[in-house]
Image 1 (cartoon, helix red, strand yellow):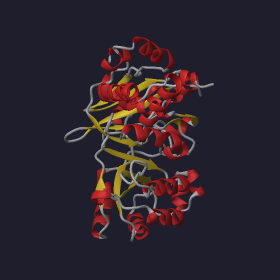
Image 2 (tube, one colour; image 1 turned 30 degrees about the vertical axis):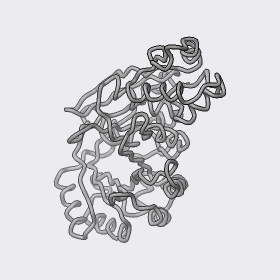
Image 3 (cartoon, one colour; image 1 turned 120 degrees about the vertical axis):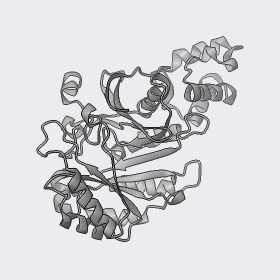
Length: 358
């Protein structure tokens, strides 16, 4: 893809410097100024920057070469302070992102793909099928839209929206490099959630051992496990058959511990009559024994045409108590966004994809 076809949001700091050098023989003075203003202040007009005042022709060349825009959010749906918004991409397809209030700042749940190929039966996105990967710039644009169009103080980004991040890992990693750059957005906390994509986990493990700035040891890993054994897991997550739980445990044992003692997060969606019994809880503890992990229990949020009802509070409490009694670190996610179809497993619009996708 040529620079003329690329969004400015596709370029990390070093990449933008390289393009300025190759195209115009310019360096950090101009490229660095543009990068900082784009990501710190949401200013995408180089002519408005002091560094370009004496060189308006360069500012014009920049606007002719790169797409300089932040998509406008639309289709906002709310459930209390949690809300979902959509962004329209250049090809007419739409991403979905969720703003989640925390105590002192906001988290943003971002999508890494449009649709998903993993086929998890409890997830609305899976019912769309896979449409395409998002570019690094399209991932970053979700954060930019939340910060500078919706004026949200986004400090935490979680890759838990549409798609399997490790099926689009190159673009996800490129986006992370941009998101956490201290010269720009400076996102402090980033979590990447996967259904257990072992090649992706192994690649992230290798990157976590590299020294800064390329090292990814500060990225939190989350595993969408959802079952205590392979039989149940493959029945609700068909593609999990590719990566047996014994192999998953092996790679998790090798994953480096993060600073400040942050553990790998095990996401467990409690589905009535499927994986929420007392035996399931004890078997889960047995499987996780010896791993430095924390379990996040998520009451099932029914997708459209769901074969299962919503999980009860009593069932969640019973499951949590068993894990606690066995000494397993565990917490329960408070439901946010379900009435706006913005909760875990509810992102995606099948009818809209059918109308737009080729």
